[in-house]
Image (cartoon, rainbow, N blue to C red):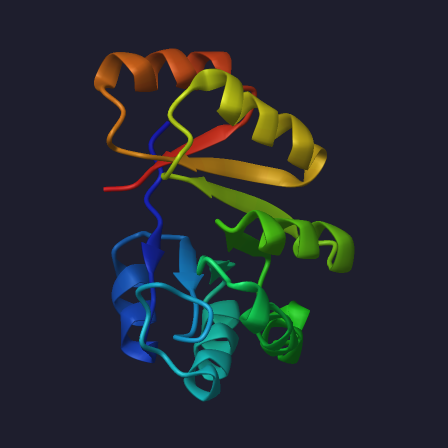
Length: 161
């Protein structure tokens, strides 16, 4: 079954997505994301409105963090009330470990870079265990490989488009 998930960067985005039948939104702020420009101050009302609209809310923390920025990034994450989101979406292995140790939220693991073989992907799936909501795979994988991997994996799979 195909399900659509989309990013929400503004309150207006939420209304458009709701009207389009999307029921899961990805939110983030520029300090935690590679691509988002939303400020932490603006993220909070977006999350609150998404909750009112009954979206499943995914907080994306997808930046790859250098050691000297790790503590401040964790402090920023801890400023966000966990009631405002349902799942954390990560890419950095250190961030993954931080979430596994310091949160009870389920995890979406972005495996778009450096994870193009089934054994590597299965290792991440096994490591995260029951807290894994889904893995996000690269569109660099050809159709045959994607089909093979989806059949072999015992978890939900998302493809970036």
